[in-house]
Image 1 (cartoon, rainbow, N blue to C red):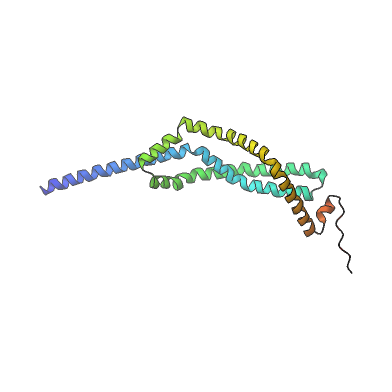
Image 2 (tube, rainbow, N blue to C red; image 1 turned 180 degrees about the horizontal axis):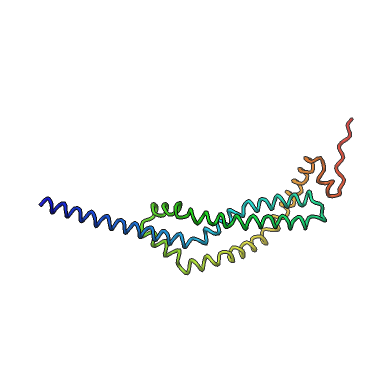
Length: 197
């Protein structure tokens, strides 16, 4: 009788282990499908990560172009700067995209597996693969642009005077801090220092 109980226990344990491994494999498979369906979002994130330093470089270069490069050389210099930024992006975007693709499974996979049951993962997969959701996501840029255009037009009368005041005040602060160099570079006479008594 003991041998029978032991054989039964081994059979049950083996069946449970096989079922558990199968369920674990199924869960991993669903997670992989979810990660695959999110490739577009990973690509967008990668592009944004790579473009952020490029935007900062462009802003800094633009400021120097306007303030320090003679007007007759600005366009040619701007083209050279743009070419360098494009060269950076051509190398950086694929590198960040490859890193995101490589790490998404090892970083996001365990989170999905830990935080969601297999049934929840299947529901999530179905939602992400839904034609309605895909259509909605494809319309987001158009909807965002339409809203942004209307918001800018509506807010412009209130925002423009504030921006002009801020620009004027910042320019005055910078002109004072540089001893009048900004106003001199524009061909305006620098403010004369007050005569000492």
